[in-house]
Length: 381
Image: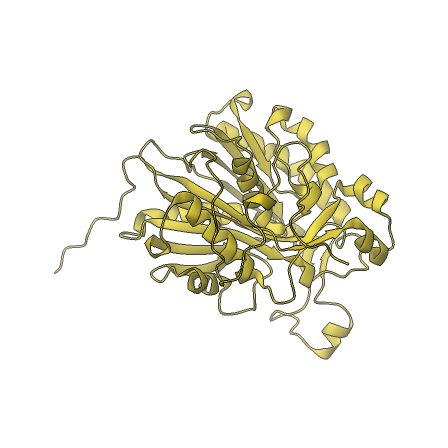
């Protein structure tokens, strides 16, 4: 009988984040038109959410387009060719279509011709879930030892503009990280993932699946719109997130004062302000982009991570805590040690589809305090 080969082993240093990237679509939507459609005011949106504007994809852009831009930016930051990528993993709950996977479209757009590709849907927790899945798969990628993990959502396509519980919160965007071998020690550490299926009704889209297939009736009654019980979600997060943060730090024996960056899911700016004191972390560690990007679903953590990098806040050895919560209900948290580069000169990012890229570094807002609004993109009418 042929002898079985030994399972692949991690490199001596381990694996870590080698580069980050993000993409924000060009249409800036201020609170005014959103408030008018939802029957509220600009002041009400700011007071309830801390959000002042968000981005919407152009009509010709889908999730794969946004994701490919972010992936190309992460590759450029790391200086890695797409042909060396062995895995493209896309976290999204708003894919281009039910099948094939959006990841396969991204793989094609960026030229990662040797990569495995699949999607993961854990709603707004998806990016951290995907990061953990990629961490476990990296040792098996062989001669293509790099993985692209992308969070992307295009919530503007599934919102009911008259529903003030959702329409005022969400925006579109994509963020990506390139993972690969690191010589100076591991940068990726085991995550804590938790599902609370008993609360699955708090967030969701009712129609379009096998339980309630699409029909003229489901379209007419709005069953394809995203719905959320905001008050119950807020209570759930207030109850569950502090314990998740504590357990993650305890698992890695990292005292809270030693944490350098806390990058949570950017669900609601006011909710983040209320939660922060309960987490036992230094206030200066909190990174935010929600004011000008809104809630971008699975993209919110990698977008904010990239903004943190572009703002020159990351240094080798910094400890980052990524924590997410989303529909399911799902919770996820992981600790990373920064192994990527320091912020360098501006990178000329080629567009994945040949068009000039709107969401380049100049459009990225810093992830500290109140991020500056972009001035380089077209505003919505």
